Length: 86
Image 1 (cartoon, rainbow, N blue to C red):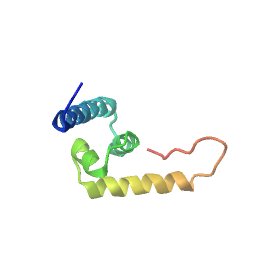
Image 2: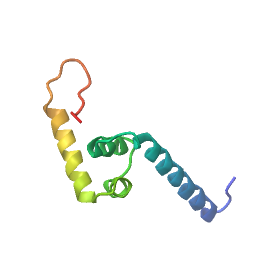
Image 3: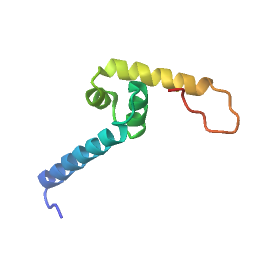
Image 4: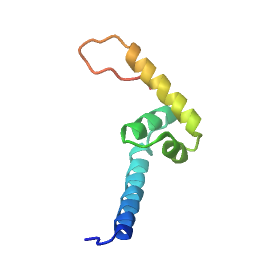
């Protein structure tokens, strides 16, 4: 078990690296960049992190997420969970 702050920092960095690897595996078969962005956002990644992973800019990611959220809110409620069209 880590005993110092430096050891805990190293554990946190390693966990973050592992989470990025798992995220890349999760999105590798998604052809749509928009769907990749949505999935990574749902996994808790920040727009700057998502941009690095999908090869775009943080602004592009933020705009895509705004559009996805807007479309999700505009969908009529039919008792089912609303999802954005991807």
